[in-house]
Length: 271
Image (cartoon, rainbow, N blue to C red):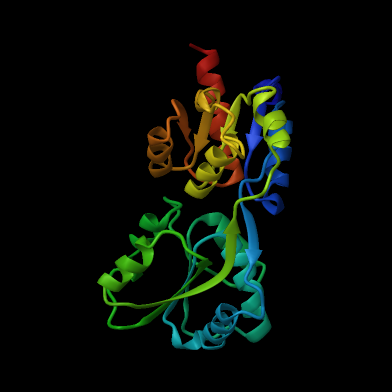
């Protein structure tokens, strides 16, 4: 236990999750002896209730019983979607196959008594698509609950397998607006020992913000920092962006991200 507490002693760990998801991760870093530095790189903004998209979303949710499968792509989709479903369905419709990408998303749905299935061996669209019940469709309807935009792999593959796919875009992801002073003090005054990134969009926002509003900062030092990511796909994206020291966790949840960081520290200490 003492070894775990001291593993990250003196390490500044840059945490980039959205603000409402960062507390537990920050506490885990502190418990491991590190200094968490919070710089949320995504803002999750629910779709305003007075937009045409919000009206479409309400219509889709009111007709959930028409869908053979409903897929939640993230914990944010589970949190916002679960709340909306709870508003319109005091009792969940029967015959719906509830699915979640990743265990954290599955667990978030339990708060709304939605028992969703996920693939325990993966945390992305490709892992979910390998489930037996998603291999063949005969024009059955599938609803994907997500944020605006994002990867199209899930919908494209399901359509190629015979499904009719609709999207409920319940929220928007935005890049936070930080002053150059905050970027300089957070990143460059003392470079982080490691950076935890869980999405390609967060990685893009990090590089955009780190360059400064007038691109007055050199990101060369930042690209030399250790980067912890949850997938090979994101590792490849980070490599193409110029990062050189990349550690791949077995999943995007707090436990796996911190464990990857701890194991990496241990392996370096033993070299």
